[in-house]
Image: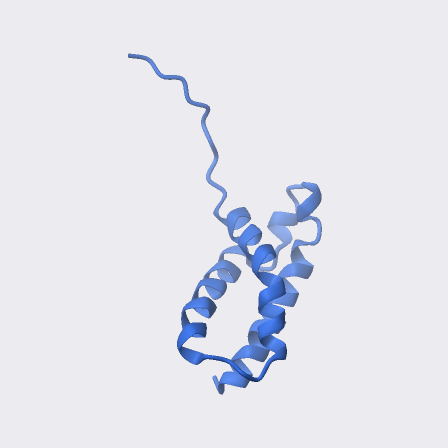
Length: 92
């Protein structure tokens, strides 16, 4: 039996970038509040750090030329800044 599937390229950095874009508003709100639940944030922060590591500085994603990706470096910068503020509030 023959099946016809279109080959798909794996894009882990782009997938991580898209997750960061979705999470950025929440991350920024968390960075502004002082009432943080460390037990909950440990898991959230770990996944965000993984996405940031995968994306790097955002330049390789921005080079793809896709319209929503042109501000990748800015999204990464904002996510890193919010993450740093959250860690500071948590005493990390």
